[in-house]
Length: 620
Image (cartoon, rainbow, N blue to C red; front, side, top):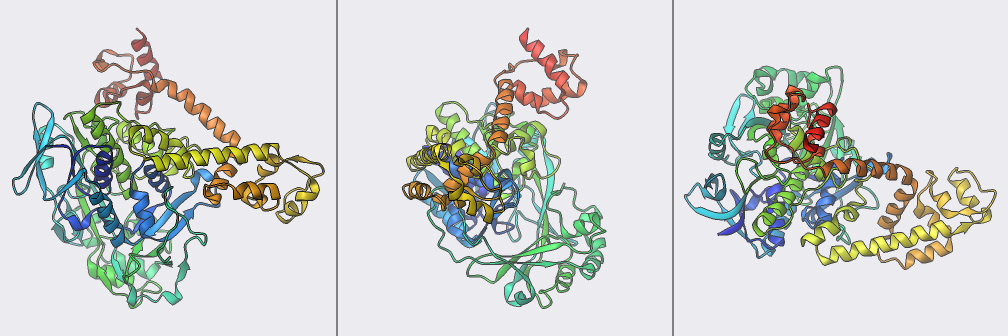
């Protein structure tokens, strides 16, 4: 008898198991292959636009994805540095073999987690409540809650040209049984597809003629606890397709499952196959490709941007016409995979299903794509499954609190009509949800839950205290023209004619606060006494000073909207009698059954006028 059973040990399942166990629940993690825990099935990287923020949020709450990423990082880059801080996003190339190794190590260190290698084919359900699972070899395990994180394995079909294989990943069996059972319980089921490119033999690539892409010279990290990255940094390389490549790919279109109608599932708009790109963007003469190392001790390379389900011979022939790949050999071809998912409007904010009590869904099963989105959901599902077992207030993150909150709110209210991928543009409060302040937003909340440890909380206290000291110093410190004018002139910034407070100079966009500190002895002495990482500390203060007005405006708007979140909608409301609400509005409200006015206002198809009617009705 367990508190929590987690089915699937991908990124969602691993975070879910770790979180529930760290909080004190007895957890059973069931996976079909113990050597593939948190496997990087597609690209060997964590983070990216908005995704990097999610990884840092998981870390701020005491999850493990960022720690494992840092241990296996072979290149780090901060994306979008040329834009405002709301868009800065960390990204790391990882050694995918070490990534899996360290994840398994972290899970096995937790004595509350037990493991079982098998295929779950049936849920044990009693009176609309899940009480356990039954595996392929007939073993029954019982628990208070179950979290399904089955990824692309539910009825997975792999496509390579006209070849169709049953599987959840190449050379791995698929899972069956659960979908049929849940459909009988009136769950809505959909079909999605995703894909992956060929893996290349680096020994056959001419890197000398390619554009090298190095990581950031100063390095970087994801976890607030990481002190340094020890692995040797490796470069990526950039190359491009061309018209000859496109023409070769076109010869395979008649055998492409994407165009023949063989694939019925919906594919990701923002990560299309190479054949999809040359059709959609037919006017483009070339498409950028990135060669990414799969690890520090392997010759295997991932060709980002060349996902394909065309026949393998066509893929290879086209690859050989790309600069640097004239003699390329492949370890395996790219392929597309179709799989079943459950539209996420069938879930509560805790990620518990509405139709079966104590059953949680997390990851690609909810129609998302990406390791980071899956891991974020897994963390929330694991926390709420533990709370369901032990009592307490459920954890729901708001849209102004985290990208994870934005992700789950979008899934629950809007559903998905394609694999959901997180972008900074999806968050209306993205200046509040920066990658540098995830700890300030979430660590205290998680510490109260018992997930974030004392070390994290102590580090946050140091950071906040030292930030305040620096802000106080620059507010009170006056600088004279003679002290700073040479510096200002060198940075093409207007010189001073009289003394002013240092904070007024810090607001200027031409330089960083860290640069100014080098010019002022008192400032340098203050920083020497700081225990927090100087670079990170100065970056936080710099952002707050330069963007203070914008940040305050966003926070005021968020506070105003928050009032709607506190207006509860009672469970047994009959929307069919509210004829003043539009037909579409009534249908959507009935199907999703929002818990608050704030949630109702974000449902696609529910208008402001509908919300006014609902407010009047609740008032009565």
